[in-house]
Length: 193
Image (cartoon, rainbow, N blue to C red; front, side, top):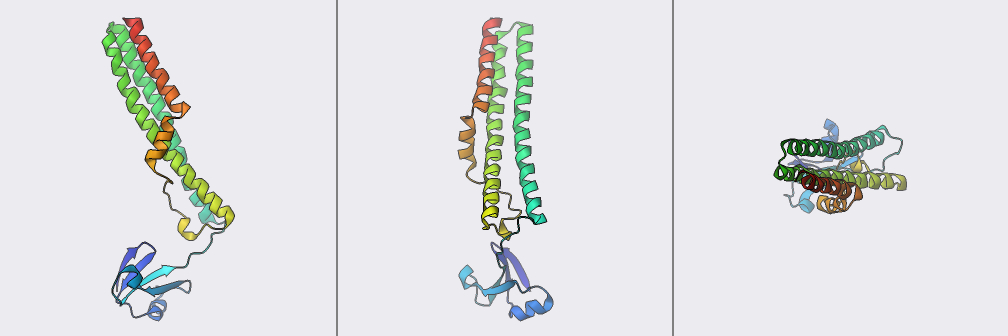
């Protein structure tokens, strides 16, 4: 028997029927085969799928899924904080070297890590927002009773990254921080000169 994964199950090629699969333990009572013409395959091809069932909010699988999502969100937030930490360290080092050597033109090099970490920070914040939206949607579906087995362990962000990235760029925590660093670079240039 040849099997290949598809979007909603496994496609079995040249399968005689459901009884054969159930006898071999490959198909339970909550699973069924459907003819494949819907999926564009030959007539002797069947699709093995499982019925969607609502999930119990107290299930260990639900708790594990929520823990995974929270872990991803926390990592994105920690990466965003690391961007700010590394940016301050690099910009400070460049400004100290420029002031120590008395070379004001070196000060403008500090804008390079500022811009790079600005873009990286907005990228991480965009992912954090997308995963937070995905988490909130799952919890909302869980409370309304519309969450199903297929929603479990689906770790994907909701929305487009570029939309979230534009929103992150407009955030005070981003442009306020990196804007202040850019002003500091300009003030250091004026001071050294």
